[in-house]
Image 1 (spheres, rainbow, N blue to C red):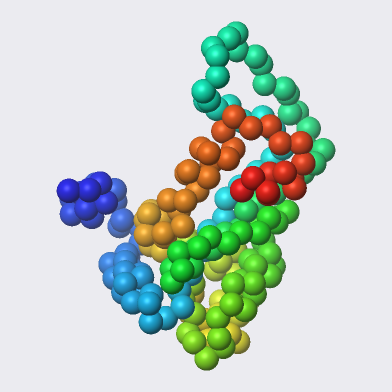
Image 2 (cartoon, rainbow, N blue to C red):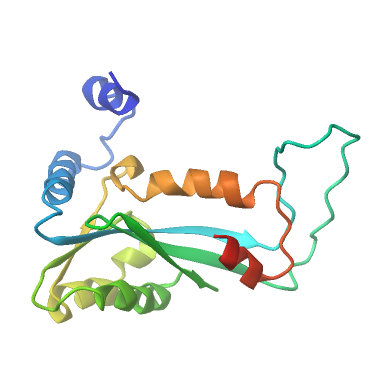
Length: 189
């Protein structure tokens, strides 16, 4: 029995905050299982990513630990990674943005939307981040582009398949690194 099965079966984490949990969960699973017939992508954000040293582990000789340099100011600002996971091809796509506002989300949605034909219905799986619920984002999906936005239930981010890719990204790219420019960080990601 997996952890997810235990959580679902024994209700370890309370989902009572979202009255539509069961319907959202079954809708999400139906979309994912039939993703071979429809275009379906998962979208999420990672960040803020700043140019600072990140602690990490490595295969090097043990020596006296050195202190990390201070980062009291952020002269190079911070970036946010907006990423999608295509469930047909299982490929990750990303874009670095200065902010995570609804305008950035709409600009980012246009990129993966171009890869699919307009006649094909596109399902976008999102979490409950407030810019995703902005009225301009919802109208973009409903009326203009043959897109259906499906939101994950509250406290159930594990239903979004892209979430599990951010842990290894942090571990293998960010830990033990100290990038000088955002271009170097974006190239490493």
